[in-house]
Image 1: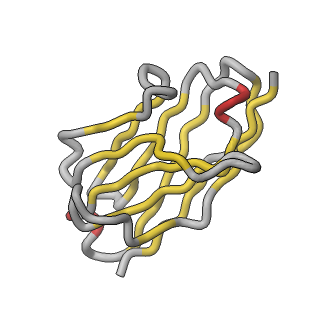
Image 2: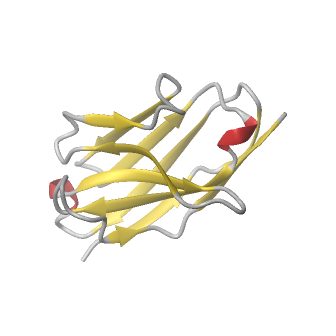
Image 3: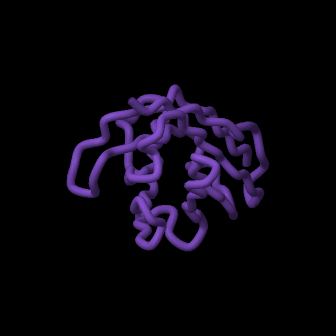
Length: 119
């Protein structure tokens, strides 16, 4: 069982930065691939970024490539999303999620953290 708790969201001006954290409980975190998703009002949840269990592989949506960086610290059971050059269209609730393998569905989800980017 893995429980995920996001933090670090807030209000920021366009062009600013935020770092989201996702703290995981459970002894299997280090073996899990992790991802970040977001959902804007009136829109479906969309993929943002993902990272392999070792951190050796990362993946990004085209809309955030070059601006966002996903990373993880397995010793701290935490995955991060560094967000730079934020745009108003990045406004959404951001969720972290975990899955036992990179071809498995995401089994565990956090409660989400709000990110609001003002123009």
